[in-house]
Length: 101
Image 1 (cartoon, rainbow, N blue to C red):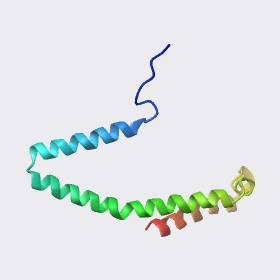
Image 2 (image 1 turned 180 degrees about the vertical axis):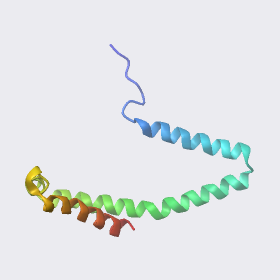
Image 3 (image 1 turned 135 degrees about the vertical axis):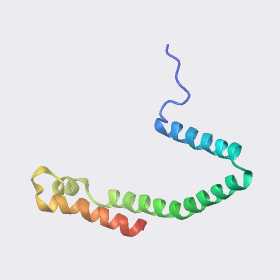
Image 4 (image 1 turned 90 degrees about the horizontal axis):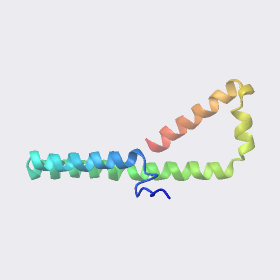
């Protein structure tokens, strides 16, 4: 029986987090503590402003996927939908830009 990997299913996220933590430790080691703390506060400020926007977008589009029937979306985006099928994704992108800023 093959041994299951502990990190199976995380994919690139594990590498991104490892890179972020490693660069943070490198910044702390090479620069003074004040530079590290200043960069950390700037990053936390960005995270604080982006998290509510991302959650709101996920919530809105989650509701839309439940409320709009899949058949109507498939009919609007099928190969023969023409210009109407191209306008629908453009409208979704514009709505997303308005909601997320």
